Length: 240
Image 1: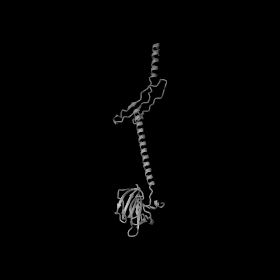
Image 2: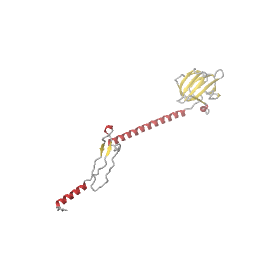
Image 3: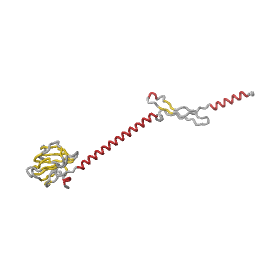
Image 4: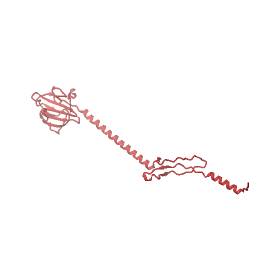
């Protein structure tokens, strides 16, 4: 076996090679996030966000061997402009919501006013006399008040004349007054009508004169209707 003397220069070279091989390991990098573009043709080469950053030499973090799936999309924080737009949209929504709230309040106020108008109606007797026929939902849809031919008939409440004539069979000379969106009053079998269709009348104003009901007796046929349906006038007149 042959032995060769190794000088100091060869030893130094060998040590340098060993040190270099120990330092030649792959560096660790910060995570890289993928962001897919909107257009399908660009999906094969997704853009990358994040900067490769070498870790300090003392840190020996294990190598992350996992590879993100091609379909993996990582949420990227919105840009300042996008955040500003979201804030603006939210403010607009709040304004619209407040507008709806105001509109709702106005509707409630309108409904309340209408109810007040109904409550303020205070029907009076259209004719002073005895009730000779009572209300019946099936037949007599009003009451008959006895009187004398030519006796004045007064408006039970203020309103507007919506009918004046003889066009309804069985009612003779007929007047119909609209008091509001709910209530009407009707005065039938008059000998004479003193107001015309379209006239506004005040409560207690003389609007007609008593006639005869058929060939029987002088009397006024009187009705009150709510939403077009007859109701008993005595509900409003019995306490007067």
